[in-house]
Length: 553
Image 1 (cartoon, rainbow, N blue to C red):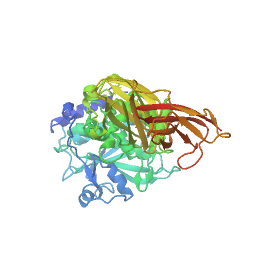
Image 2: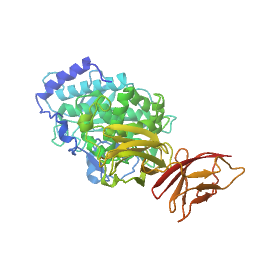
Image 3: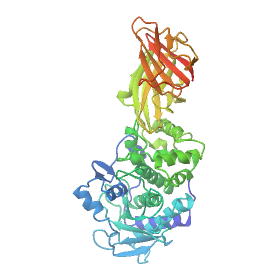
Image 4: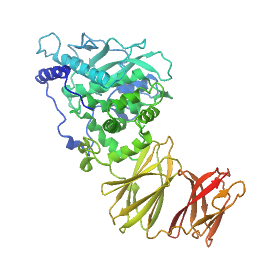
């Protein structure tokens, strides 16, 4: 959802004109330059991980979780543990913000006052920008306004302008707000740069001020919903940075600073959890919210945050999506598919509207497989992650594939010549037509909270021997029988037994020269199986067959 111009936006335009007279703006107008290359950004690092805003560092520092280097302590934390002293202050036009600034010294803002109102034009512009940000994030999108220490909406929010040395902006917690939730709420203040003219800023001037104000003010909003802590680390830091980066493009659609973070996302997306919070990854992962916005509207993001007081982020996302008739499981797999259609493969009607600006996902050499008629390999997929694989066959023809997993609800899709085949869940069979030496992409998504062990099978339909393997008795009554026979099995092969939802039960090797095996209807640990449907995957000597068994108890 994009917003119509308002009186505030026109005021911003006037202030922009005045400020341009005294500083040269470097606007982001060549997105193609960064599609597949890293770009410079302004940041501070902790233990080797860099963030372009100071919010993450200050939040982590609050609990003393990581030691901070002396340089970063001086630059970022020592100055901002309490609000910095300033020489002057003024209200924004709406009086919702108090802007604190210096007229001289190291932190002085540009002195020009072309409006001749006694306030530097840079501060006039900042006030209009912050009011516009408030209107979009709170009045239009429905986010909670920042709170005071009594837990009610603050009458004014304080913003300080400093020469920050290392980051675009900073949102700093002050006091904890009492409440009944285990998530801790905080009051805060913001720090923005005093001019944004240094060359190492990715964007400069008012363009940088606009998106940073939108980003940091959303952090202030997030602190009013609550922070869940786990061993001194904020559990939902990934969601915090995803949301603040996403909202930059909602409040200021044409600046596109978020695109600078995408190379890190696209380089490491495969098998990296959605919940990964280190470095630039969560900033790039704002694309997950861009996808949800296009599908369900901007309101979906504030709906997620409304649940943070009761649930950690990953549960809040799933619960919010359930109100829209879908789930995290479905949308996480869709997200991987959307990311496969960017850059030159982009379709702005079906996928990301600005996807032509983005890099393209590449498959790691370790995840490229060259198959003959029958193939089988094992891999792992991290929690809340998607893994991207590539398969190539030596001859064209019809093939079948099946993915088995130790966890339920694992999704698989194949992308062949721009067409999506799937998704299918564990143990289901997918029929494919593959051209020789023309790679197909496989996307496997694990929406569970634990790593999934995955077995992928591909076989040529012309080579498959279907129906030759049998199990008996079938169905089997556990009150009457305790041994099952699998007949017509390939010598030296193996039998893999799964539940109907793809969870592994046991594996039985087939001895050489044997034509059948027996199974005592127990898991590998000796525990008896329950009633239900079981799948027998039999493979060896060019045979790959699946047989169903009904167990009655």
